[in-house]
Amino acid sequence: MSSAVWPKPRAGDYALRFRTELKGGDVAYDLWRDDVENFKHEQRLILFIHGYADPVPAANEVYDTFEDRMDCCFSRKRAWTEGAPIVRVYCPGDVDWL
Image (cartoon, rainbow, N blue to C red; front, top):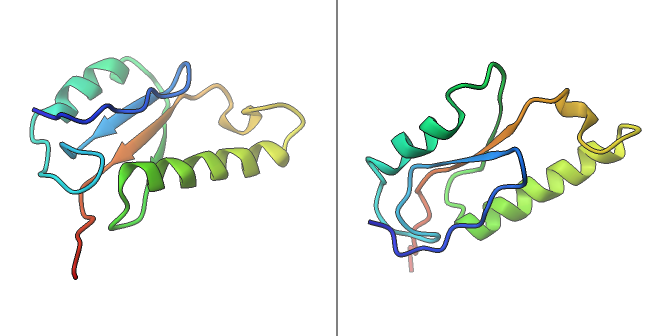
């Protein structure tokens, strides 16, 4: 089980976790099933998937920046989602090579 304190998604959004820790750690083979239960009723979703080798804080920083930049392109905040919730996907892959 994860000892990580996961950031809460923004209201109306979700997380999909395939990792046990915020940085490093193992693949979370069961954690994602609980996450899917939270949003399986939604008809539309927008998935944010970070690059390989990103710990959760770095992924969140990129996700936040992307949302802010998209908001600048529209007349109201989150108009570009057309009401669809965002699912922030967190997958493992960050490794200290040195």
